[in-house]
Image 1: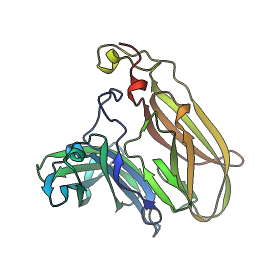
Image 2 (image 1 turned 90 degrees about the vertical axis):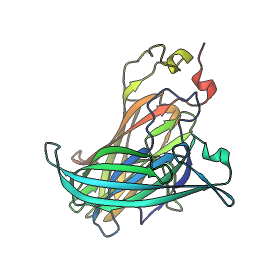
Image 3 (image 1 turned 90 degrees about the horizontal axis):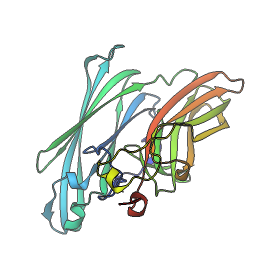
Length: 302
């Protein structure tokens, strides 16, 4: 994916900005690990990171301020029982961030995004990612698991990923790292790839299932953790089935979604590929959350 499409990284606005962002745990950096097929048909994972400027230490340089950090990824193979069986990949890379003013260094709502592709054989893995600030030597660690699929047989599907924007004419992806969609963002995109050994007519079904939802906009007391939020019954606010024609090789698929269809809460998108007679050929899931944004959207009453 990374070599065939232009992944637009670097500076991005973080969705949980300011004191009035919906109360939730905010990690020191966001992480996504996506299983895909490389341009040489080899299986791989793409590691996406996004770290806020406020978690980096900047130093004064000519023309502005500069920070640097290192990303280290360690990949362990997992047994069927989920136990680590040994280190299979250990890779590091460095990033530099330059801003013109001191105020920019304190921005909680601006992040630096980066990605790296690692070749891996099909299987289950634990991925540990460490981000270390160059100046302070302060480090943050996150861990996740990934299943790398075998994309060489029949019809297979990559892991889905969320995009803040997708420019199909220029083949540009604008990744949403962390899976948080702000309520004031009009649209987002669910992107995935289908790998086929032959052309086929398929049927794809998208279902968004609620994992948890707040009944109404939270009050200030709820935002401060002083009052419980009421929950509604869960449901499926988004269901869509449509035909999908795939050709031999790599096929890019993108579904643009209006954010207003979702209340603030936690969701899981499922993608199901079937033949025209209903036989399942591939399926995948992608969790995401919608969060209230903006002062007006946050404060219901005092």
